[in-house]
Amino acid sequence: MSDVLLDAFLDTLILLPFLFLLYIIIELLEHKTQVGKPNGALSGKFAPLLGSVTGLVPMCGFSVMAAKLYRHRHITVGTLVAVFIATSDEAFIVLILSELSVLEKLYSLLAFCGLKILFGAAVGYLLDVFYAKRTNISPVTPVCEAKEHAHHDHGHDHSHGAEQEEFSVCEHKHGRREAVSLYLVSPLIHALKIAAFIFACNLLFGFLFYGIGNGNAEAGEEKVIGFLQGSGYWYQPVLCCIVGLIPNCASSVALTETFAVGGIAFGSCLAGLIVNAGLGYLVLLRDFKKWKENFLIVLVLFAVGMIAGYCVNAVAIAAGI
Image (cartoon, rainbow, N blue to C red; front, side, top):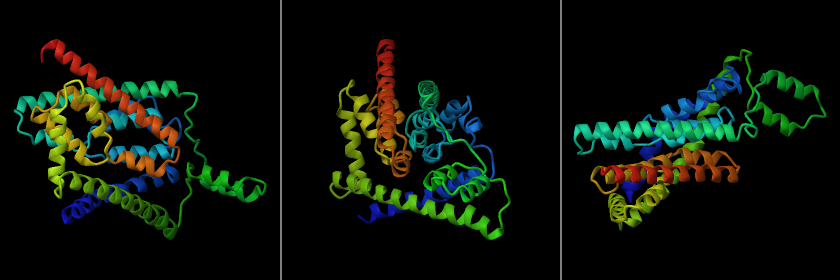
């Protein structure tokens, strides 16, 4: 049980500096630069493609960043989904360290990366086209002007003004104390809050595997791997997608290890890794309160994973691979 606590703590501790940096970036986006504008780089015509490429970076850091930027409406839903589809958490690291031959590792990595970019960019652009009229990336206006306007306009709805300021840009120079509070203290507090939530979720899933393994978390992961190995060829994409939804690195590790030992087909593993967005799910659900929209995002990811898994498996069968 102490191992579960230690693993949850270390996993969260590793992510904390990235969260801190992420919140500093968000503050800079909203107070110093014009990047957050609807026509900026983060929401431009290449955004879904760039999102699917950056999502390939090992670990789930970029999915966490995408979820936060989406909450602040700095990126579109298409870009968010593109990053989530491309995210593979620790899968590529596990694959590189597996006992597969060098050529098998190379072919698998290239196939995973190519298909994830393809599906991520394609689905991202489709969503942005479909939601073109519904996408509401908040226009960026100077914070200081917004505050002055709110101060002089006594009849203005203050709650609306506060919401608008969240997506504002301030180009005025701040004093040293104000800058420290804005760009260091505030990001640190936000990062610690999210880290506490992630730590609680890591504990939850750690104890879940601990229970499955009858007092051994690693044995629990092995049971999940054995379950995937025993599933039928055409049931694998469904089961892998369900496993991929687990917002913990254990899911990507289990899927990749099972694939590496020949327990599941390539398409089935791809399906699970497409659905797997790591801790990005936790941040999305923790910070963004539109549950219906969250459900639709998860549903789209699950559907894309299923379609990709079955299509790739069908091609493999037809080609006799």
